Image 1 (spheres, rainbow, N blue to C red):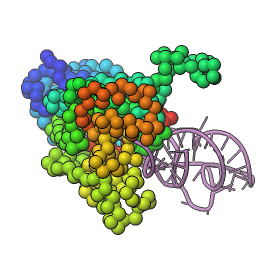
Image 2 (cartoon, rainbow, N blue to C red):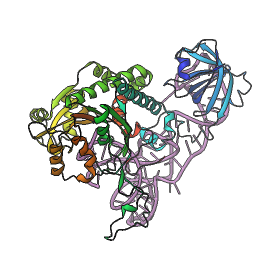
Image 3 (tube, rainbow, N blue to C red):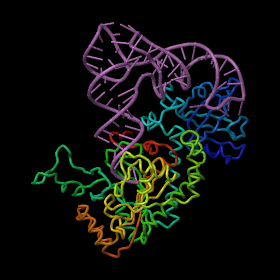
Image 4 (cartoon, rainbow, N blue to C red):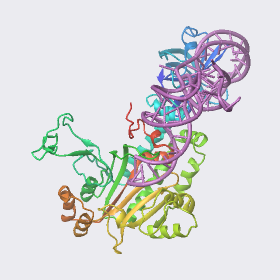
Length: 466
RNA sequence: UCCCCAAUAGUUCAGUUGGUAGAACGGCGGACUGUUAAUCCGUAUGUCGCUGGUUCGAGUCCAGCUUGGGGAGCCA
């Protein structure tokens, strides 16, 4: 007797005639008074449940089997046989049904109904992985995550674990969460009356990181090709379908590389992970295609086979100015593109993700490399239809004098940045990298529109439940 | 943070000019069937988000608040 997953049984990987046990949860029960019941059992191993056929001759048929409802946990033992019914190739002819855990009140079990709004499921985040859609999201998310690690590993990148607690308050990527062990009710004060962070755990002000990039640069300037993949925190009061206070980010950093190399890497990485999802999760993707977004599979298939469009910011402005469309925010060279502009470029003008490059220096961060024109920096954004910015990256300023000039222009406190300047003082090299918002990637791949539904327990302003 | 919309049964929703609460699904009971989110019959659902106001009377009108959704800004 063996223990098998639902996925292996319905895929025919368990030989017919073998006695096996599956452990999982009941999705539905259908009774036939002709003398049998059918249980659809899922265990998370794949999208489709396995059917267990249970004869009323089983000793606990009346006492246990007939009281099973959606959500009950069971262990079913029986012979794997070819199914007599339509809808599945293989099923289990049960010889034993063991009830592990009943649902104590089926009438109020939140997951019992057939259809739920995605908003309701958000309120029961501890139970929603039991649904088809959130289960599928979890598997696709895992596949994307594994594929990202595999991609960088195969390309010779080192995975660097950058710190989540940081003292750099000038990363410029947004508001930060304070990390402190001080007693808020009784804060220590300096003679001048300010909070005395010398008394705090780290002896200085500390925060949760908004990006691992600066630390990743240090390792790239020693190990060549590195990446970070971990959680990131932004205390911005953003209430949208594409922002989280806690999200995961993939940040590769490449030494001896320029902007074009970073764009090449972004394109290759996206194609690699799209291909992995298409190959490894056809069951879940078929569900998303049927119920969430008709285009989700064809979109990925097209992208795997086509070159991404690359466009300079300056050319994008010309396109927007001449497209004849009225925008709420007027377009001219030097403005930061807003959602409507990015949407037009990605969704209407190109109809696919587009890589925008070489932005005006005044709308970008201090560490981005100044171009020869003195007006633009070697920055890039990957804009995805329906999502917007999915990747933001740049070639880093490797020239110390230029870096200092930019930090001065942007009023950045250099005192925390000496270590970062050292990277330019001791054997500096051109290098480049980008940040990929992992949840935005999951959202793009699955077609699930709200970012709060592609992370297990979303954290957002006024929302940190479970 | 700003703009718009919503809140009624476990869930998804309907509820007319203000007159005392309804359907479907799910649950429960039964019928029927190698069933496929089965089908058919029966049955119970409830602090109408909260507080106040208008009114003889408020799920319905008004104000404030709370929560949720969409859009914008910020960004990944």
